[in-house]
Length: 450
Image 1 (cartoon, rainbow, N blue to C red):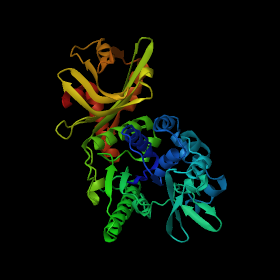
Image 2 (image 1 turned 30 degrees about the horizontal axis):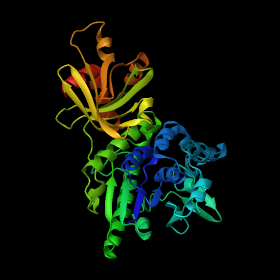
Image 3 (image 1 turned 90 degrees about the vertical axis):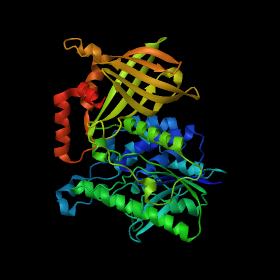
Image 4 (image 1 turned 60 degrees about the vertical axis):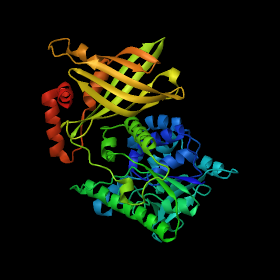
């Protein structure tokens, strides 16, 4: 059986895909072909450069998202907006992002030429002919990879040998057809493009909607072409339950790569837990998501020490303001040297009872699964001990750990800075959520949820 990994676009948010790849690798899944489109080129580029899933997650933590765009020569801006070739160019991708992630085009080509190598393809549109080319890993170079991520308006295209190369997003944002052409019997589609019925106002929202329509249209066309040709295959799709935050939230530090990676791991683990051998139907439902309820998202960090080894737990909570709307969602990771590389949380939940709040999840450490819990109590008595109530917690990981942990002052400051509206659109709705949280406070939000 031949298995393909098809990595869809998603802008800078494809950090999420690193968590997905980590979970799939832990499950022992091997892929004979890897295909990347738009932002998915980053994930494909790392895999085909030989970067391990653990290092993929680690490398994303070191990326400065400001490097995704770099300025054009000043003279281009002087021309005015109607003659501006783009907001920026791909130099930041080539000179900073690719090296930070471990993407090496020479290594991609070298590995692709080895006997029995994993096949690789990168999708780039050649504008003159209006065609999407699935460029083989044996022939790709860094400039073509960057061109495949050069979204019109935002980054200038690549001009080479009288042709113009750019992002394939308006033709397709995931190339299932190429996977089938290469003989795939099983396709794993990693999808981080939104797919809900929500229609937003404003140029950013509607630009994203155009990408969503183009991406889904091309995906469905691939399914229809396969059906018409009598080409049967099994489809698995890993996707977020709710649309991921848009790139501006990442760029403005409202969410970070570590959180996105944790979300990807959580989402992949959720799919793996409930999947069947038959896979999913090849229709719009395979990538469908739900709009999240209005609420807040925040990140908490706790630290401790056992046997001279530091323990560090980071959790990101999505807490709905209306407790009947949906359950709270939890993602995060644990850093503890004896456990090896960073351990991500799966199946996270939030349990609020009276004044106690407990975060629960499953973690894989030492080749086995363990139940993790972080518990603390918020007392009702006001006064100077409120900080003590907040910062103290107890962390258990199966039979491996059972220690007190604390939130330091710097962690508390980071917590306050991390509080963001979630599940809302537009400045008015965002402001309303901020006001509710500011008036009631985080403790009150937990009480309301419980």
